[in-house]
Image (tube, rainbow, N blue to C red; front, top):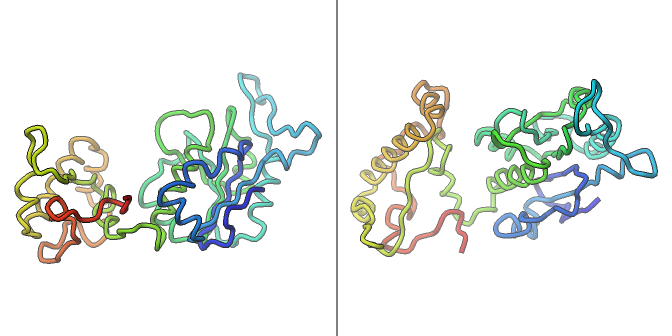
Amino acid sequence: MQDQTAAGGFRVRVLTILPEMFPGALAASLTGKALAQRIWSLEVLDIREFAGNKHRTVDDTPAGGGPGLVMKPDVVAAAIDHAQADAPGDRGRWPVICLSPRGRPLTQARVRELAAGAGMTLLCGRFEGVDQRVLEAREVEEVSIGDFVLTGGEIPAMALIDAVVRLRPGVLGNEESLVEESFSRGLLEHPHYTRPQVWEGRAIPEILLSGHHARIAEWRLSQAEGLTKQRRPDLWRAHTSGEVISEGGRAADGDRELSDAPTSAATGGQTKDDEK
């Protein structure tokens, strides 16, 4: 097992046959800083260590025939049981998740739920997939990051970890940026601009330089609604039907002063996620 600052507050355990892939990109930027500061921890378990033979076999041919190989239930179950040995019994606080193209689509709402928990165990599938019996027996939640197929679950696991960890307290330099980003209100995020004020003949919209926070909020909401309606009609339908409950209400409070974002183009305010 590879253990990266295991004393961290939010604990992530990854089950994979390619442990050398971690932490990978998670060691850089904000997630890497948070890992070093023990705001979260990463433990990587090699599934092959739980195989019962000298060849460390983790897969076998699919029942009923067909191409490829399937990850064995006994081996995967042993890895999950080891990973969950000291985890809370409440799966709401510490779920076991298999990254799979057939899983439920990952949403920002689910990411927020995960970030509010104590940790999570991620199973990275390979080959044709994982034996269905172990997914059922160990109550594994299947999650998809999109309608496409990759060679394995490691990259999706990294994406999920990044999405969750950045919501943990102390990870972002500018936590106010979470309020207006895409999906936080059930809408895509509005366009962003920064200096120079005019670039290749294209000017920053005057409203963003006005300093009028209420009008800026109205403009941003209008832009977010327009983009969502155009690019994600599914989100727009859910938003207008009330299926998505936004945080803090549907529209920004026009009288509430925003962060420094409204005038950042003119004053050089913080960037998103404070990455400098």
